Amino acid sequence: MALNYEPAGERRGASRLPLAIGEYNKKFDSSPLADGQGFLQAEAPVEIYLVDISGYIWASEPIASPKHVYIIGISPNTIRDRSGSPWPTLLRGPAGVSEAFRTPDLCIDFLTGGMFSDVLMFREGIEQVGGRTNALVCEQDINSATTPFEQWYDLLSKWAVAHGSREVHDRLMNIWRTSGERGAYWLTQHLLIEKQIDVQEAALEALVKIGRPAIPYVIGSLAQFSEMDDSEHAALLLRALRWFRQDDLSAQLDMIPRLIQRFLQSSDRELREAAYRCAEILPSRQAVDILTIARLSEPDSELQEVIDELLEEADHR
Amino acid sequence: MWVREVKNSWRELKPSDPDDIQKAIDSIVFKGDLQVSFYKASDCAAVAEIALLWGVTVMKFPATRTFLLLAKPLFRDFKFVRVKNPNLHPYLSHRHYEVKGLDEKNLFEFVRRALLTGSVYRFPEKSLTGEFKRRYPTDSEIKIRASDYWKRML
Image 1 (cartoon, rainbow over the protein chains, first blue to last red):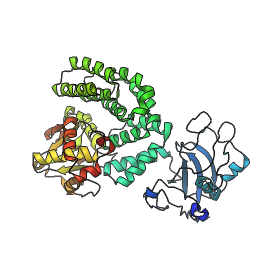
Image 2 (image 1 turned 30 degrees about the horizontal axis):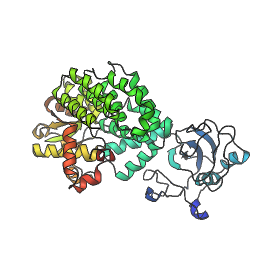
Image 3 (image 1 turned 60 degrees about the vertical axis):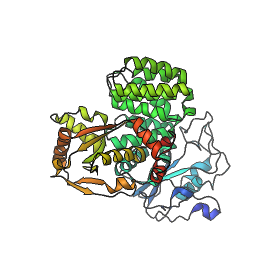
């Protein structure tokens, strides 16, 4: 079966399908994301899987003997259930919806917002008003058992090690930014076992980009560290905490002083520095309290200077 | 000299301990990729410049960075090949080298020797931030390449 898609949006005079994966997806238009556009040019037999961005498969319909799987991820920002949860747990819907997944045409139409614009997409607790949907399309070998997260992490790792282009960096960060809680959970778990220094740094950035959904996982992981655990990964998580947006942190801010205090007596100077610097995110008075106590027991002159500098900054906030 | 960033824990690793050598390999080599990059520095000033530009234009977050310095004469039997990378700051791109021809055995020997003979140089966050603030207004390459996290320090 040959598929030959026209840019669906163009056909309707509406927006075309925005593709967020470019150069490693040779079957798709690799036009840059600057204008957010791209279009399908598939010719191989395909199987369409409709998944949310966290990898949850909503529906799949085999089209033919597949050589490739096109995974179509929908940003959780555009799909929410009534409680505001960022992903639906089950696909239920009117007959017309399941019909939509029978053919690639309808599936793509769904993603481009052409078919179901402004109608209720899901019933039984999962509602979605149609319209423009942020979609990610990537190609995956049918024999590969990897999840989208594994793919994205692999791409991120390769980018980091090769010091790849800014365009690819921005695309990858955009993918992770919209990966929601599941992405945050997955990424935190992988950051905790990552050993390669460049990949650690890229994963750290991706985690920070995810923002608010990642914060509970970072805090939860830090809370599980004991003094005996590996200080390298604890320091990485403290560094992540430091760079989240202040607004995103506000709900959990009262948990952070205790977390920081756990690491002030560590024998690892890198971990102690990360803990001191993390105090930057606290309200001035709390930061001063923690840093003043830390200053009394800090044996390293370089870190004493760091604390003094942070105390001075806290005083001026 | 050959220069590259390593983990702060590098200096605690022992060249006599195979497990430590493996830890060092895992920290700089990507999953059996057998590819290691370095930057070539002719003197201490060049080391400092590489460390600064690496920390500010490649790394997205301000942090204290640790660099490994290898004396060139001690690694003559390894093949360092210049591989320019247009994604890097031109100063770094021009000095970017990869060690070619590594297999598992000689990678192990390379890293063992790096642990044995290399020296470690720390670039504190405060120094990096200070240099960043000083250079940012006039250095267009730094301006273009610094992340938003760096720009928060201005």
